[in-house]
Length: 227
Image (cartoon, rainbow, N blue to C red; front, side, top):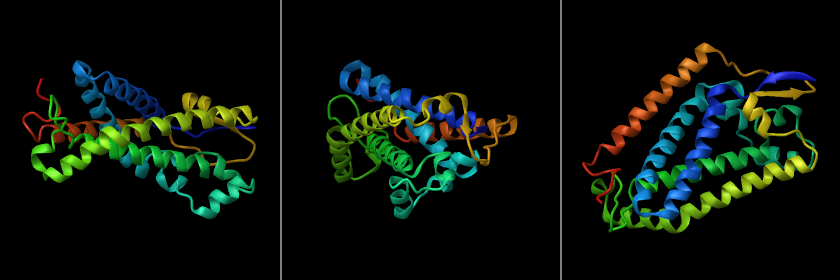
C-alpha cells in the first residue's frame, strides 16, 4: 500500500466550510425572522466558496481539477459494472463525480436565485433592483419552493451514499478528506500541496470574497434586507 496525497489542504477546507455553510443556510432559512441576517451571511460564504472552487478547479491540486472528474456515460457504466480503471477511484469516482457536479450546480442555482429573491416582507436580494420583475418572481419561487429541497435532498443522498459505501466494505471516504491522504495499491499521481499552492489558494479566496462583496454592494439595501 502506498500513501498518496489526494486532497490538498485548500480542497479539504473548502469541503468542510461549504458543508457548515450549507447547514447554516438550511437551518436559518427554516427559522426565518432575525435569523435571516445569518442566512444572508451564510449565502455570501457559499457564493464566495463556489467562486473560489471554480478557480481552484482549473489550477488546484491534481485530483481537485475539474478535468480529473469529468466522466462520460461510458465511464460511469464501467464503474457500475466494476470494470473501471483503478485511477478512476483515486479522486472522485465516476459515480461520486455525478454527486459532486449536482451539488455544485444546485448550490450555484440556489445562491444565484437568492441574489434575486424578494419575499415582499423583509428581505430582497442585491440584484432585485437591477433585473426584470419576471426574473425576480421566478428566482423567488425557485429559491423558496424548489431549490432548498433539492439542496436538502442532495445532502441527504450524499451522506447516505458515504454510509452505504463504507458498509459495503469499501475504504472510508471521510478520512482522506480530513487527512488528505489515501492508501492505494497502485501508484497514482499526488496532488501538490505546499506553501506555494496554499498561498495561491488564499489569494484566490480573497479575490472571491472581494467579488462577492462587490455583488452585494450593487444595491444600497442588497444583501442586508429591510427590517
